[in-house]
Length: 193
Image 1 (cartoon, helix red, strand yellow):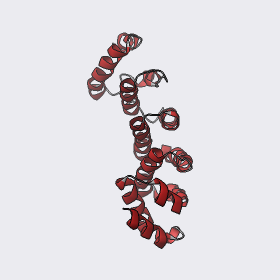
Image 2: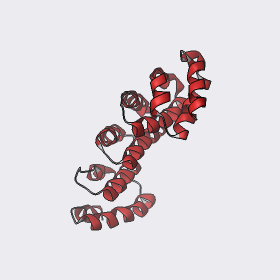
Image 3: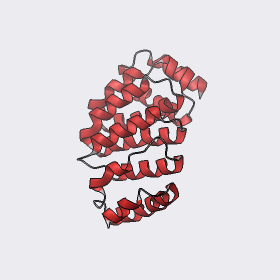
Image 4: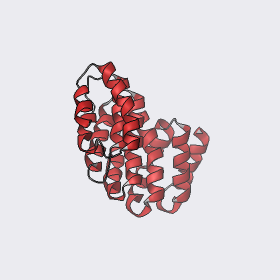
């Protein structure tokens, strides 16, 4: 069955989309069915957005202890090179989910999130602020270095999403003793909320 389905993935985009949508049911019944073929779901730059979104969803669902590193690195590439905001958000969110799901992946996720915090992309920074909150809450000892990325420029000029702002309010309030100028940051966040 797997080989037949994977051979159809070389068809037109519309057929690929229908196949990808049907694969959700197969993966729910037999999660290991496509584990060896996860690279088939890597996104090509010239694919339409609706196909990219479905492939990224399936790629996350096929992630396991053996392939999480490759999946995270692939999602990182999409998050930094893709122009579509929905895909960027989805990739950052899935990197965070993988970090929460597989403890071995936390170090890689924290490293990637640190790189993302150095970005100038508003969408990327908003989403990484939310995902970082969850990683820090679950794996405090191995992820506190992300707190060093909180600064005044991030708070005032870049964060526009209310959930991202509330994530930073939580982090600053919870770890105020580890963040210099935390009182000023809280005041700035409240003023822009």
